[in-house]
Figure 1 (cartoon, rainbow, N blue to C red):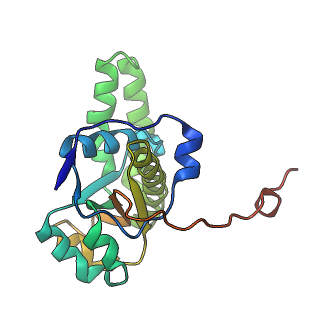
Figure 2 (figure 1 turned 90 degrees about the vertical axis):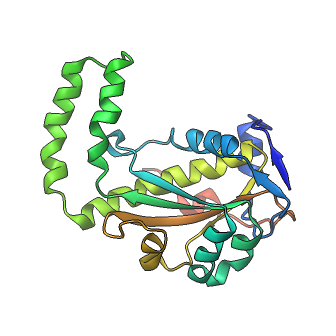
Figure 3 (figure 1 turned 135 degrees about the horizontal axis):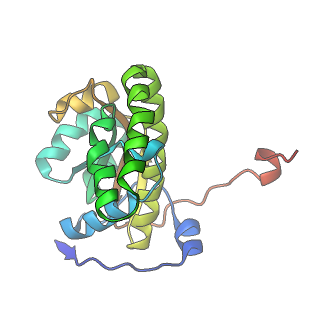
Length: 215
């Protein structure tokens, strides 16, 4: 089994975007190292999020045991589970405001903002996060989770890997299956990642005049 050292293959944004395909067959012999996966995830987390609370949480399922747990929960996507280097389960943390001090305290320490600005932000949003309903917060983390997921797939392309976003799995069971609190962590999607074993299929996109309007 081959383990690659971290190395971006391209910084050409046009190539990254136009070269992305939803790949369902991967080279089983290619393993993504922990270091490389961390670099890809780090790039993904540069995505924007509401109040910069970064509610995304990643479960990297790469071991045979982890994949065996996942397989019955993703019955229509067995090939991706079986052949990919890993399947990343993206979750949204409903308790994301708990990380306020970690995020904004570090911003003050690094000189990105004065302490009083941090305190003003906390005062402005603490009441909002206390009162927001579970359903409203779920909407927030699903949007933020979608943003980080797309960025993850593009980051993977920059490292020469391919991905497939997967929505067809048992979302109501996945958190508990991996020992996570299902009331706290909202499943966003699964993303298989690895070295493509085929070129995938080209697909048609609607023309811009079908999807955009100017006023």
